[in-house]
Each structure stands twice: as C-alpha cells, then as structure tokens.
Image 1: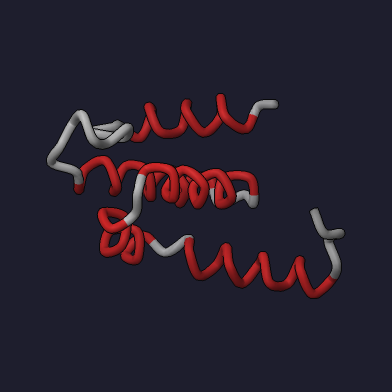
Image 2: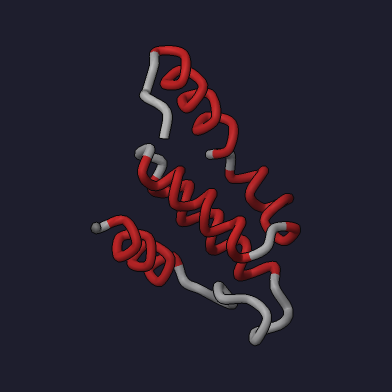
Length: 90
C-alpha cells in the first residue's frame, strides 16, 4: 500500500466529496454489483462519510428487485450502519 502523501490525501478528500452525494447514490447504486458497492461504502465510511456510506447501501438495496441476487435487499438505515460498523471494527 502506498504511503499517504499530501497529494494522495487531497485526492482522497476530492474522492470522498464527489462520491458522498446522495443524488449520485440514488442514480448509480443500482448499476453496481454488491462487491463494488461494499468497497465504495467501506471507503466512504472510513473516511468519515458515515451517513453517505449508509445512503449508498440503502439506495442500492432499494433499487434491487431480486432478493436472492442482492446482499443489500431492502436494508434499513440501521441495518446498513450496523454492517459498516461491524466491517470496519477490526
């Protein structure tokens, strides 16, 4: 893993600001696979965008019509928040 340089830190800030948008989550989340969505939500959560990470998971689950195909099917905000806390506790 690369060292966190000033340039990388600035890029991460821009990334977080760009992907923390709730409207973007609503529009794009259904296009992402669960693994892709999980990776994005984990990064946002660890960067301090906790509410936005939860929004991505909930929007993704709400956009799915196939329960068996989506790990996030009909998650509540509480389900998503607890899952993110459990994942990032280590």
